[in-house]
Length: 171
Image (cartoon, rainbow, N blue to C red):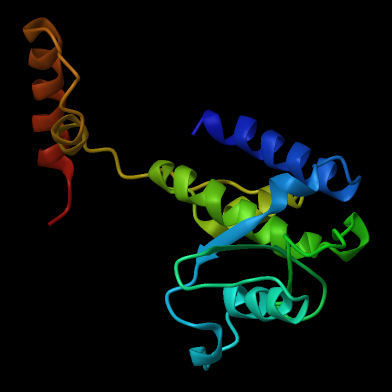
């Protein structure tokens, strides 16, 4: 859990850079490969929307092409194709969407530390939270960490503590 404050600081720094337009637009580009012809897309996925924009601009779009785009204001899935002749600018960027995406990615890492997404969001927003302590079971931890090698002198006192804790644990 000691990594959480550092992670929160890093997330806040990234959000501040995004808010002040210091993140280069090329760092905000997402992409997907087209798996079928543009006309065959029934849904309005980001890649399909961007591919239609490219076609409308007279650019060639084929199955298998990686379609790159930036999230823009409007609906959650509104995008502008990156390869359009006129490049998007920072005013068009849906910063809220990028913050959500960044927070989700950070949570993927921090969930290993048992930090719920709601708690992470609250901490980034400046709320004070007492994070729940995970149940400590050193044996589960040791099984999940195959690279950890502990000397026998360490394991003997741990086993005595575990026996005492198991005796006190309610059924």
